[in-house]
Image (cartoon, rainbow, N blue to C red; front, top):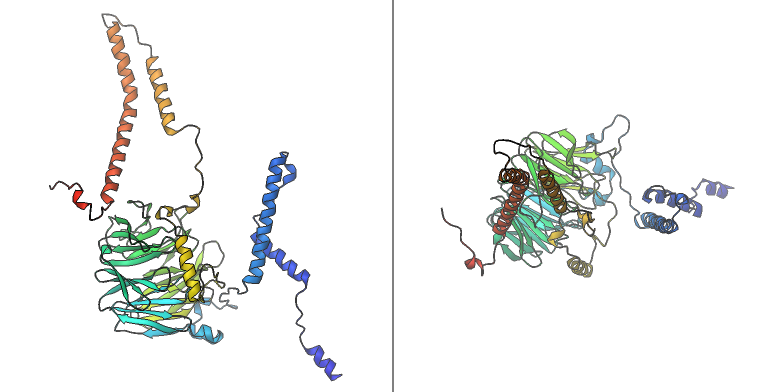
Length: 535
């Protein structure tokens, strides 16, 4: 009798039935469907009806495959801080969070204090496994974030302004006092990039294998790290700036300037693709959402603005000042200023950000850079006294794709990935504001603009020739006089079209001259170049 009572008291952990699994899959399929299916019964064209039926079937199969992959291959689910009652999530401290998380997560909370070598700047690899640190006084190092083991550190004995990993953890670039250098994982100097000059900021474009830099003179340079060639070299013409960020969606480099403008560049154009006035004062920080359609800017006018890059309109303006901004993989926005950090979150999903978490550093710590660690709920902080790490629940993507970024990849997998990414390398011409246009066919117009203009000129000339002149007396009605008046009327009609044509030709010649000036000849051909006349 006692045994039966004990058995009754035990919880029944029954596996889910087939019906429950199918119901759960149906719910997940609805999330991936492209709206309601088309009503094919209304169509009379049998060919069109058959084509649409095949497409609808393919859409259903792809939604079912995506739902199965989500259920069986993506077991981890992301979570956020949840407050009860009148509690606020931004009141939770790091000490309270560390008491509730597991041991492996609590190891991500630490402070490395090196006051004699700071301030520090940080950069993570795309997988989040490795961290590169650079101290202003010349300290460089690489850290394995899983085992928290220092792989290599060395002293370059000169100013270090920025660090950036290249395509993997084996190589990283450092912007030093006079030139930029590329080092390997063991700390060996591989290349000295003298052409870049005294660089302030570095960014690496992973899909294009391009290293972009902005130097003290306001020159933007692109260098292909596979071939070593200089792809682009442009003068921004807007002065010195240390605000630089790459849009991960399309590879466009954005710069924030002292006049409050943000310019967007690609390596095949000597003029900016977009120049937009964002603030009534210098731009202090810039960040892009992972979807590429949302941009956050901070200015000295004590405003943080969120922009929709599809329409170039302001979505939200928040009060506050930030020296550094960064978006996480899940869309959290971190803002750092002096010794305080504020994390904003879009709760409703309508691009309406509000305060989610706050954190205060030790008084006197000046925050220089904030970087979210990929695939982890961790925020890296580079400050004047070293670098730190705090927990931000819900920041990272919970499931990683081993074909995109694998934190646990072996040496063989890394080599294969490097070869595959080199084969899939995109040329610089593919960098544009809307990369979805690549591969599409431009629709042919029925009439070109040139044909329309010619037809308009012909119609105007016919109308001028058909004007009837008044009969005048006293010798003013001679055939010669009448012909002269007709020719004058035709010339008056032609004049605006001719002036427009001359203006267009001048603009084309000016653009050609500007592009030819921007192209730098190889050293072997520079002696044949035409020298400019000295004034």
